[in-house]
Image 1: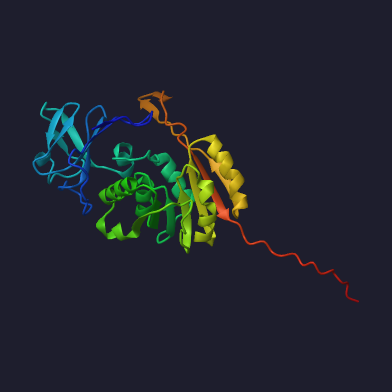
Image 2: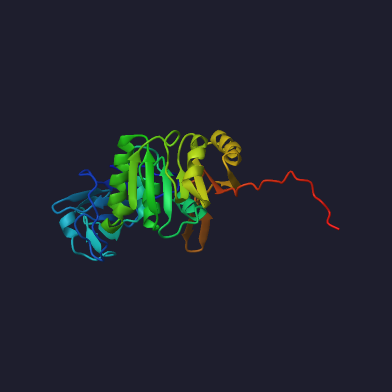
Length: 295
């Protein structure tokens, strides 16, 4: 399946007509079921799930999967048109640009910023709502978090779980749970260290999130337009949050060839706003008793 990524990204073809299968382990040689990237001399990429008897259709001919099995990563194989391709293990970033999706995904440049904005740490309990296609869920789990997802649509929940298990080893599968629910109305639980929202109207979920996270908790919201951002900024202080900051991340690659150096003509520009907030400390009551000077 062909997929056009955002401006400034490599051309990636996802050849996975048989669907996603579980990845059991990380190895130094190509094994069946692993997700690989085949790169030609022009740096064009074809992503495939390796299967015995399978094949990948590239810009320059077909590559038999039986020729891939057992060879070391970084080695070369020849296509049916005798063109060399080097094989690499697919990264999470590469997979996200071509992953099966039900909803628009958050791109790697924003995922990286969200992970640091959350001040994530191994074992952190994270509440996530609006899991979409699972790009953020996968990033959180691979960073060591214990993630509870809340998703309104069953088809999105199914896609998210399938994508996560495709990129996360089985020993981490239990670190991700997802339930069908409405973050605007449902009881979201309690005892979470962090929360992250990718919802059309995140301000409607703030009261529930505030009850769900601890006094040292951090909330991160991802919205795509300025109207949402303004509404969110007005609602956060009312819901018990402080230290509210918002930013967007722009990414531009550079072209370098010998002594030629210039920015690429295309770039991954605005994709969304990332808003971070901390739980506000409880307000101290001011005594109404008059102050009496002691003799």
